[in-house]
Image 1 (cartoon, rainbow, N blue to C red):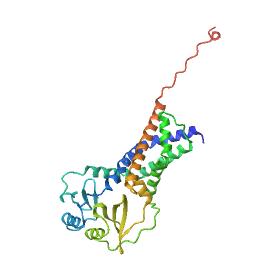
Image 2 (tube, rainbow, N blue to C red):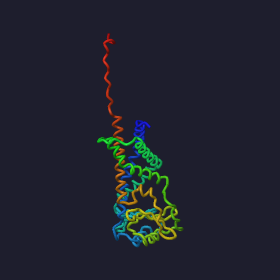
Image 3 (cartoon, helix red, strand yellow):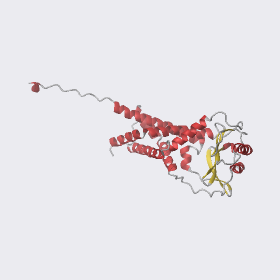
Length: 304
C-alpha cells in the first residue's frame, strides 16, 4: 500500500481519537504506580485477624458490608456496601484526613475503565491505538535521525512489543477473555465477612491483603504475594487460588510489582511522548506556510 496513504490514515486516526487517548494514557500512567506502592503491604504488626475482626465489629456491627479494601500506602480501610467512614488502621479510628492518594487511584481506575460512563469509547480508542501501531508497522522500518520525526519513529519501534501488549491485553480484559481455566466452584452459602477473615489468616498474611469482597456468588480475596497480586476464592475445600488471569496481570503490571510496575510506567511515558510528538508533527505540517509562487513577468511579445 502507498506509504503516503498510510501516513495520512496514521495521522487522522490519531487526531480523531486524540482526546480519549490522552485521558487513557494519563490515567494509565497514574495506575502504573499502584502495584509498586501497594505491594509493600502494611507495616509489620499493624494488622492481624483479631484486630481486623474487631474493626469490622465496631464499624459494621450488623454485618451488612459486602467486602473491604485496604490501601497500604494510606494505611486506611474502606468497608464496601455500607455507609461507614474510612478507617485509619494505625489508630483504629475513623480517618481524620482523606486518603488523597487512594482517592486519586480510585478516580484514575474508574476513568481508565469507563471514561465517564462511555465504555464504548474506551474500547473504540483502544482498537484505534492498535490500528495506529499496525499502520506504523506497515510503513516499514524508520530512518533514525536526530529530529522530532526521528525520535517519534525510533521510540515507537524500540518499544513496540510493550506498546502492543498494553492495548491488546486491555481488549482481552474488556471482552472478558481470561485465557485461563474455569475457576473452582464457589462456597455456598458464602461466608460472612468476619469469618472469611479468620479463614484467610490461617494461611496468608493479613497485612498484604488488598481486598476481600463478594463478587457475584463468590467470596474472593486479593493478596500481594512475592510482588504478585493473587486472587483466591473461598471454596468448600478452603481458600483456593484462582487460575491466573494473564491479560489482567500483564495489563495492570501485577505479575511482579518491582518489574512490571516500572515497565508500565515506561510504556505510559513513551505513549504520551508518541501522542504529543505525533500531534506536533501534524500541527507543524498543517500550519506551515506554503511558499508564495512568484508571478511571471509579462513577455515582450505580450506587451507589444
